[in-house]
Length: 191
Image (tube, rainbow, N blue to C red):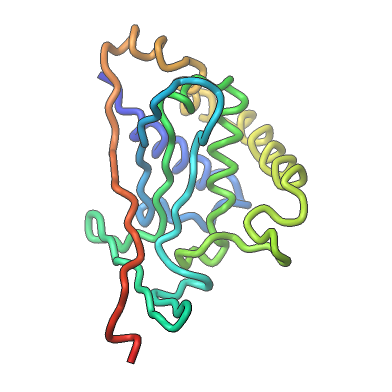
């Protein structure tokens, strides 16, 4: 049996410890989860990060006269600020380079303030900035730099295998599965 999300957590912890651009990520305050995809094909989402706060880390947001609150989530005594989801088996069937870059892509979305909001760029394309290509080039450079570091190779070994190869080796894959929390209407904030 192989715990896919544990392996991703260990990889992300090592990245945080060795990549200064992502040193702000507090691994004990984020959860790694998987979502199951219906098809293993290359079309669709591979991974995503869900911030558990609104813009600038706010717990509440007013929209169209109504106040919404994010549910607070704790795990092992820590307030959780982000959930990083990986779509299986689709993510596992990407090439090694695509998988590693995707991990960096999602981690780079985490706000440098680690306040539960995403990293925001100026303008209307605040998630990736004016150019998604520039965003991807930035995370590709980080991934290329990381893979050359001591200890990286053993952390990424599982990424070199696709879903079926991991099943053949381990017999079964498992991992954390966390339902995405949704903002709820806060009637007390509407007065």
